[in-house]
Amino acid sequence: DSLDLGKCFEVINNLVTEAGQLIACNNETRQEFELKSGDIDLVTQTDKDVEKLLMNGITKHFPDHKFIGEEESSGEAGANKLTDCPTWIIDPVDGTMNFVHAFPHSCISVGLKVNKVTEIGIVYNPILEQRFTARRGQGAFYNGKRIQVSGQKDIKKALVTSEFGTTRDVEKMKVVNENFAKMAKEVHALRVLGSAALNMAMVALGAADANYEFGIHAWDVCAADLIVREAGGVVIDPAGGEFDIMSRRVLAAATPELAMAISKVLTQYNPMPRDD
Ligand code: LIP
Image (cartoon, rainbow, N blue to C red; front, side):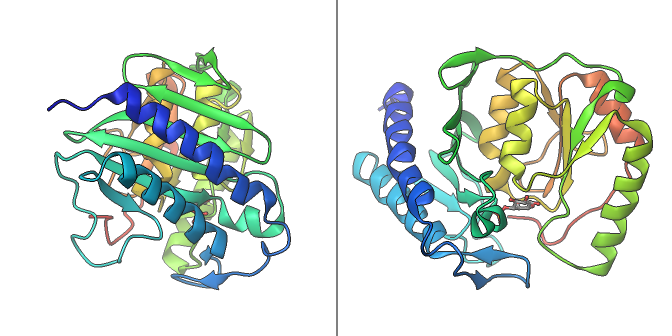
């Protein structure tokens, strides 16, 4: 029987509103965290609680749906293999470091893939009440209003975002710093705000013109990839090829011209292992 995507959207839109309360209200416990892959890769009880609330809520309505989640992920090779089954790709708190510091720029990021195609994307910052939504073929929205990318083609006039990432690995940091130095010479402005999903949402909104990052995960970018494309933007691999959600590399831009101009400037990096 066919999947009712309208119902899927309604269910997840309500669930992120509910889960958002856990993020917006957790001022007392927000500073407590555990380390994941290293000393700047954090997880809080809120990450776990939000993920549980979303997964339980989805399972109640759609018992046969699958999940790929940031905290759910076992880290085993193949654990995140994407199949044709409806699969919810979830980051319960994207921007956990911001959350821990009360920097009000964190979000829930949820994408739904069916037959490996993203049908629904929601990026929701409950602290500032910023909700970005998209359904495939139906446009992108910010708090219910249709949005569009800036249309910027000129790298010299572009506001570009990226991140330092969640590892201090020496090789990785070398490339990150090299790219910041190179980009700073080319672009109008370079910004580092601490959430991969919100960086891309800002491209969809037309507030930023592009975002790139090496080291992101599928759950950081699944929802925002659809939101950017539905807002008229492009999402590609930083080397210029097709975007691969499991490759841990992303370049989102307002136009293909800008994406290619940035791609040419970037020193490329291939984070290992892949997400799948
Ligand atoms: C992180 C982002 C961070 C980015 C990392 C990672 P987390 O997500 O917020 O800005 O650099 O690649 O995606 O760990 O906070 O969910």
